[in-house]
Amino acid sequence: MNLREYFAFLMVMAGVTFLLRAVPFVLLKGKLSNPFVKSFLAYIPCTVLAAMTVPAIFYSTDSMLSGVLALVTAVVASLFRFGLVGVALVACCTVLFIDGLWPMFF
Amino acid sequence: MFLKGVKDGLPIGIGYFAVSFSFGIAGSKFMSWFLVTFISMTNLTSAGQFAGLNIMVDAAGTFLEMAIATFFINLRYSLMAITLSQKVSSDFTTPYRLLLATGITDEIFAVSMAQQNRVTPRYFFGLMVLPYIGWSLGTLTGAVSGEILPSWITNALGVALYGMFVAIVVPPCKKHLSTLIVVVVAIALSLAFKYVPVLQGVSYGFSIIICAVVASLFGAMFFSVKESDDEP
Image 1: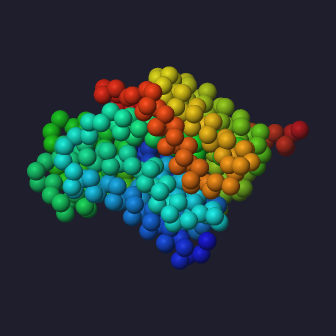
Image 2: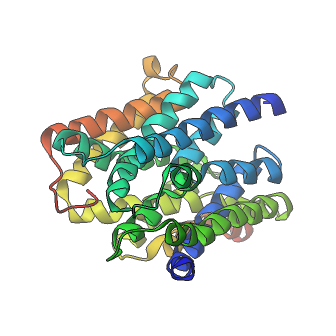
Image 3: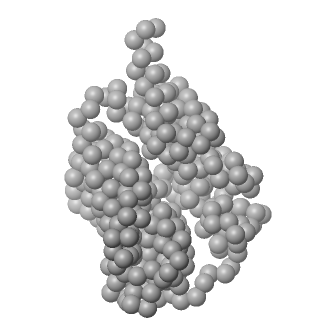
């Protein structure tokens, strides 16, 4: 990717994002009442994040084992409500342990 | 009013710093710290930016794919913008709306809607200042760290963003069985795009779009979200 492509992609991404926010904010009046559309939009954040995380997290580190275990520990930490930063730290420590410390001793 | 907004925006700003730090780390693998930071400064979205970054660096990524992926991932902001337009004061005129529309994010929207009074341009601007700074500065710090820290540390920090995604997805799944089922559908589709040979040709952006749209349509069809629930 060269600099020209970067700016072209950036303009598409930033432009679409801005229009999605600005156009309804400026033009639309009235409340969205269609339950189907509301439900669809309510599910989007979770489904996007889930699809982006699995299986990509398996390939995001030096070994697949650390990626898989990071997902497992992150899910467990989330169930115990560790919060955003806490869960991220647990996942990072898992990878640090598996890829960083483990090979040093074994 | 401006200062009240700044004060209310502080916790959001701190949270954004942490999330965008991980985005900066992720981006530093592909481009210089300046270019990564500029993405954050012009977009102010989490999932949308991350998907966008991956489409950008994907050799097969196209502008159409970028436009469609960004559209679906960020479509929820339109819904928030419509709702927020009911809540703003009468002096929130069109020029203000154009200038401040970028501030419509999940968290800033949620805080605005929790206000007793109508949302004025001053308050909304105050509210978005620290989150914007936190988001940009966090990305900058992450991207620079990604360039200077040793690889065994950046390797571990690389999962931070995914860890945060997990932290966002798991709690609503624990609360609502319907959300869990919808998320499992999305993951199953995502795995299929990675491992089923005929589907492997589908590029990153389109596979995310298809997974999210199909799973959410499935959810909307079978498990309608009730009025009282702001999040599924």
